[in-house]
Image 1: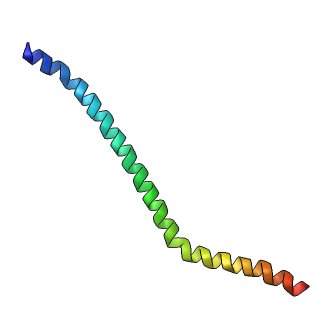
Image 2 (image 1 turned 90 degrees about the vertical axis):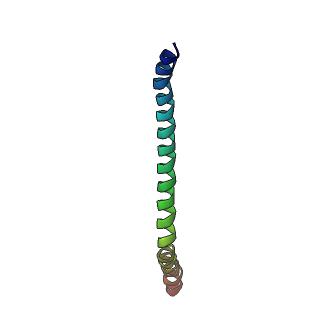
Image 3 (image 1 turned 135 degrees about the vertical axis):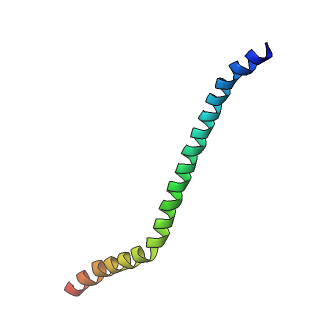
Length: 67
């Protein structure tokens, strides 16, 4: 009797564990993706600032020269 109870509980426990593993794997992938995104943004921050400053100066200086 005790052996039958242990055998019946096995697959149910594995399904629950598999679901938890998939949940953890999904969350880990989300964290890794957002970490990569933050890293890329912080790496390109200086270049983006320089390009933005250059474009802003062109948009201000060129019309001022025609006035």
